[in-house]
Amino acid sequence: MSGHSKFANIKHKKEKNDAAKGKIFTIIGREIAVAVKEGGPDPANNYKLATIIAKAKANNMPNDTIDRGIKKAAGDIGNVNYEAITYEGYGPNGVAIIVDTLTDNKNRTASNVRNAFTKGNGNMGTSGCVSFMFDQKGQIIIDREECEMEADDLMMIALDAGAEDFNEEEDSFEILTAPDDFPEVLKALEAEKIPMASAEVTMIPQTYVDLTDENDIKYLQKTLDLLEDDDDVQQVYHNWNE
View 1 (cartoon, rainbow, N blue to C red):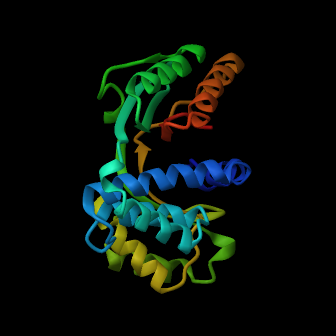
View 2: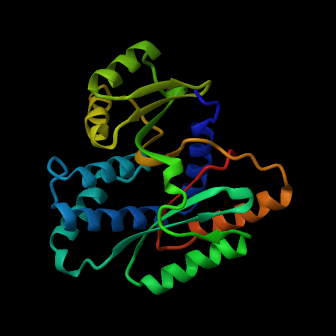
């Protein structure tokens, strides 16, 4: 692999998520509502909803909570007024940052995101200014300690289901797919009862930026913390090699 351990970052995020699970479930619930509004309540016919359900399961959201969210959204379609807006910008030393939001108040969200960049000595850019540095991929991370299957067998299941790539880390396996193939690969792994540490369609950096200056690290962390604490922010992607 590239040498950048995705699993370590995921474990760190999960520790934070466990401390704020209510917020995580609220974020996913909002994504479910928007997906149902756009494509209906059946994940078999709604690719976006299928990917969000996978993310929900990877975050240990109970099945009945997921089902309730879908049913509530299906009965409340006319009242869902969230808008998806993506912001892009730069942190210290040119670190690229993408911020996905769902908001019912664009002015509030834009102001909060701009404030997070400014307080971290960065700046918000125009649409497309950094997204070309990332590839959108389905990404599934499997903890080696939790997986009883041999690496070769796991790789064949993933590739046969349509995965693009299979990578081994010391502590984990990473499966990459095209976004459209993600649900099928996920379904094949679920059929084999393979536990997944993370499963989502995400933005993967093509290259990473190293930060050595303590002030740069402090300011970038400030930006990321402010963004992750914002209720309108759904996902934050960056190319900092933590």
